[in-house]
Amino acid sequence: MSSGKLSIKQEMAAIDTKDRKWYDSLSAEEKKKVGIWVLMRYTSSVKHDIKEFEEHYLEFTNDIVNVNFNKLAKHPQLQFQLLQALGLGKSMWHPWIAPGKKGKSSKIAEFFKEHYKQYNDMEIELLLSQYTKDEIKQKLEEFGLDDKKIKELTK
Image 1 (cartoon, rainbow, N blue to C red):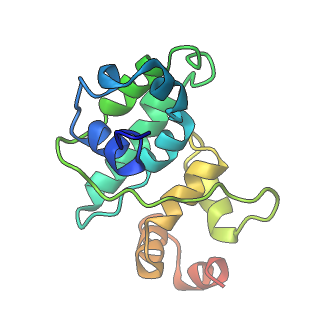
Image 2: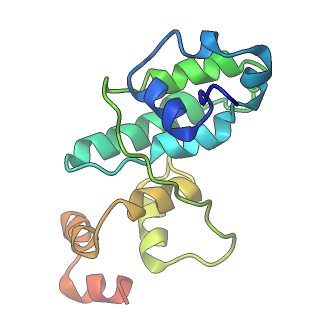
């Protein structure tokens, strides 16, 4: 890691900017250290003023990279290229969101699971983490819930 190519900042920049030469520039030893699952978690999480960018990274990480993830585990370069397919051409801030704890789930998360059946628990948690409380309330209103039901879910 002496070249600094394997810092999360460099890896995410290579994904965001679609730097097609970056992976090939790694030594065989460095390629073994690339953590695709970790990069997938980072890639799916973006904080940006434009909500559509955040939604793009979350939804397409799920649709393009997460699908058949385990089947492609023996092809890390392909997985990295799939992550690069999501890049929008400029570096973004990708905060780490730790995997959720098994078991306990909020009423809001349960509601969203019912309406976004294509997402797993982790993805619902990630989706909700990108919204403020007011934005969650607005989403619930968009689903047609009245104030009483929204208060019940947001307790």
